[in-house]
Image (cartoon, rainbow, N blue to C red; front, side, top):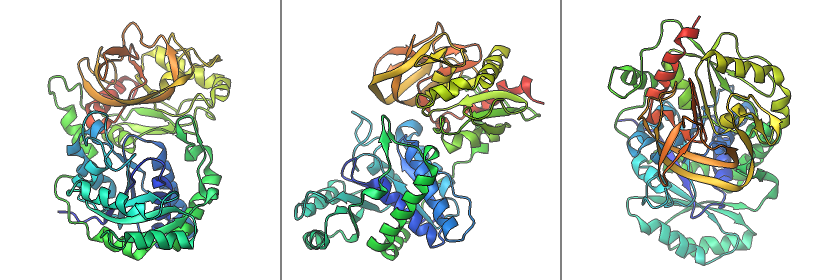
Length: 477
């Protein structure tokens, strides 16, 4: 049994202010000297970046040198409900307070699959009190009906508090508080409307922290100040400490790799080589999307993970024997990525040598011949471009061919989120056969290159990390 003080920060709907309130709470508690563990329900990569920044910058401004914990995702569709608590306990180990930002509305989940992947499901699995962030900008007494409805809808979900957001005035706040007095759900804060702390958005949501670090630091400082002034931090901490102990296993990347590398038919794993191959992982402003568990699994499988920035670095890390290029916004930086000809040539050369490459979404575009007319790495015989159509949703897929990432027949659950298109959409050997919600082939399996739009959380299929590092063995020093 493990005791972890924890809260889930949810809302009735998207746009209520979950991210800004959660980041403000994280920063305010970090300023107090608490070791805060940040988590996000769903597949979103951008919000966890703001969480980590809020904690690290707040601790730094308070004169407390502390490396912020990485923001971690809790997605019951991608990883399975059974992994939510183990992944949470892994990320929150030893913390003073864990804050979990929800996704969409409290009860919204994977389309057509009930509560699966909803904030409510995660709150139930974690047995965590829920604090509802309510956009009060266009209501007064009706707020009581809204909160009562959410608090009573599912008795297994403990809606234990409310934070009123976008409140217009002292009089407005008084009306809201009066309406909620008989609701049985206490109010832990009221925050005024404030344009100055809003994060800018574009075609896929908030602009990532890596692209606006200095401005983002100022924003989270302002958020922390608003939360200090408008929220009952002592009350929220007491509520978090009321969460019961959690039982069950703690997710362990080394144990996951050990099991995945055993000769189980179809697992596709292999033991880590004696020498540690260098696995280069793309980062920087153009490639900001990754799950912390991927690096942990690669390291546990025996790799030496070395980050690099395709916008700045003209060479791959010394001794690179494998390459992982995750998601991000290469379309925003296409001219700059194209101008880095030495690195594009190095990536093409690595692919030609047969070294394993795993690329998803942004990585797929970077490996194409061109992106919006700008030359890219030319590893794939495909052209990429921005599109007016947003592709968004969960997918179920199966590996069509053997690649460095997955053995043929490996089944995965993934997520697509992009406003780009690539032609052709699949190579002669596709990476995946999508089986739900529609049937189609997708991506490219070319030698030991696996490139696809599909984002997969490797914690659900740790064998892919073991397999990938094993395929890097010939390039190990």
